Length: 273
Ligand code: SF4
Image (tube, rainbow, N blue to C red; front, side):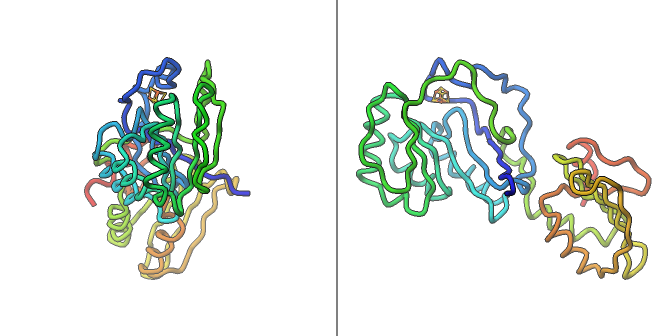
């Protein structure tokens, strides 16, 4: 079975609470990398702090993330804030689902009010309800919910199952940019496609109208470097890249220059396209 590739995307650290057991107090978040390329993830989870603590700001962020992730990937949110029913519903409408945590009895009351007046918003969504041990069970749940109760604060927060990065406005690598980069492939001699997470690199170099040299080093899939000549028109090559490598970073480089080793190299090499 293929493993789902997850990204935990921290929107901000601000929260309307100050829980002693908050994982953000245990971990140093100052070194979190800023997310750039969302196309490789099957599942993206918006987290904080509290994603809904800054009012309507979150709606624009959800739109930005949605626009710059794969169409078949899923987008979720972790929240503990259900007192603003309108805001919660507007956010959930743009998501594939959410996990709601009830830390206190007041949260349970807010949640009960939410499901009483807005149960329709859960249709087609994947919902989880996490209830802390000291909170009374909120009663009948809409069928979309999976209940995880008796939660207790952990002395040591578990490492998230997946990557953990920070969201910053304007920093996501957009599909429009990918399109421009792919369009540029025939205008210069070389194009590297570079997958930063599995160390994969593929180089295409056109040497006549119909032939392209392809050199691949994908250690996870194939343990050797392979080279082949592929017969492809410009159009076919673009399609091949879009269909098979859309989740990869695309790096243009002059012949003989070193392969990029970090995001900085990637930006420098592609800015002028
Ligand atoms: S609600 Fe969550 S993010 Fe906010 S302080 Fe508590 S544990 Fe931390």
